Image 1 (cartoon, rainbow, N blue to C red):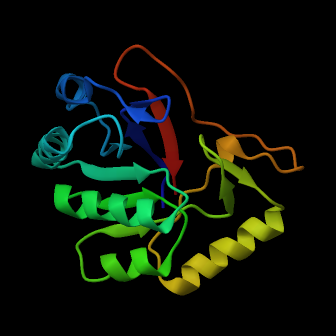
Image 2 (image 1 turned 180 degrees about the vertical axis):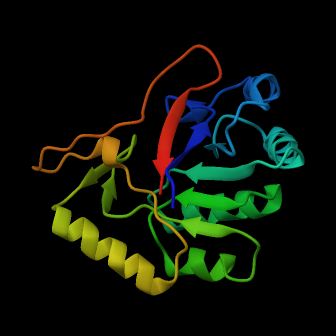
Length: 175
């Protein structure tokens, strides 16, 4: 599988207010994966943005940065109602996986011990790997690894993030 990135229309953990205009200006860029957060836009604008992305063949991602089951389920419902392809983020809960099981959407929860807002990834590499294996055993289709916010004791190099004033706000690599 070749690495690709998700172009996230976010800034400071919120969807940018002009996300639809930015997408329209950049939709012909050779980027297939586009996403944004569950905060920052009203529901009708979220739906319009997803519809616009899907109309030109893009894969859509909603990232929900939530730590509670209630917030995670709220985000899952937004993702389904808006027609996203993938829900990423949320701390894993069986109830979210159960809610999504018969829906046309994939679930990529956070791997590892996540806390705080903005979210922090903590724990040993062994703990993170064990949690990733647990998530895989539960049947999730992918994982959201917050490696750029890892505070464990192991030196970590993360590549792929950058800021720009053009068509990109943040890249997140997927494999």
